[in-house]
Length: 338
Ligand code: NAD
Image (cartoon, helix red, strand yellow):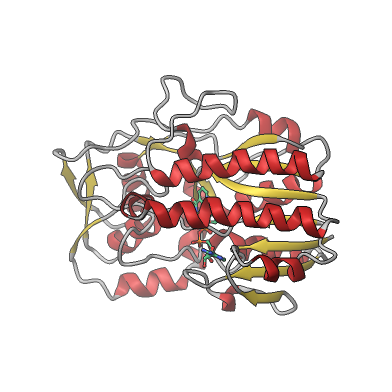
């Protein structure tokens, strides 16, 4: 296959591009490097710096491409609350630009879109499946849901196949830890390893589905290859429900370091529960999440030297972090990103 990965210098995109390249596919990447790092990409991958809204650039990058993986996006939930226009422009506008270019260039067989579990919002029933009504509660989630709708509509009108993958909280080695809006797992690991404090908004009983990067990459690759997935929405999670409190305990046990946890009970904990029903991914993609949380955390610690280095530079500062990962913020003082 000849493949274009938008957002291919990012956390998930670079792992996906490298794995596709290893499997013998020709891989092109488009990324504006607003947060990505092209040095993560294997030699032999064709990297192009640019904006996913740049239609003339897309015309040339889409030449002779069979499958597009569309991951380029702004990914911070709290930032989306502050800058909804930017999220609309990049996440929705970028998707529409890409789909229009696919239609005009012709030849693209399928577009696989990285959507998000945030589109589910609060649900009475867990685990969540793809047939449930969506309740997006933050602009990031709205942008992903709107992009899904454009994906299916423009794919149908343009004569190419489309698949929307609703990814839950991805984690793994190489996930960036920005100073603001850091994702929950690398932030916790860094703070606990470094002997610092972590602040959990709410009582820590809120649950999430943490899915290891290798499982996410495998699901995405299969979505580009399997037949019978046109027009489908597919959850990509671990199917494992973990409370934030249990996450802290598990990390502490693995790193053999007691965590000093400060609960900010004044702050809301965000969505109370969110866990994926991965039955459909199993049926359509033969996807089985392979890496359970404890094993995934051990791999993260083994393989992420940057995280260990960063932790060794921390001398017990107290950190308020995002306990939600890519999900809506868990309270006024928390931050969130995907
Ligand atoms: P990331 O920020 O590491 O990757 C996004 C990439 O897109 C970055 O490399 C960034 O530079 C690039 N980008 C941003 N705006 C762009 C633009 N206008 N033009 C071109 N490139 C642009 O985030 P990630 O965690 O790797 O997420 C990848 C995708 O998966 C995103 O679409 C995200 O919404 C989705 N997703 C991620 C998670 C998660 O837990 N990480 C969960 C659900 C969905």
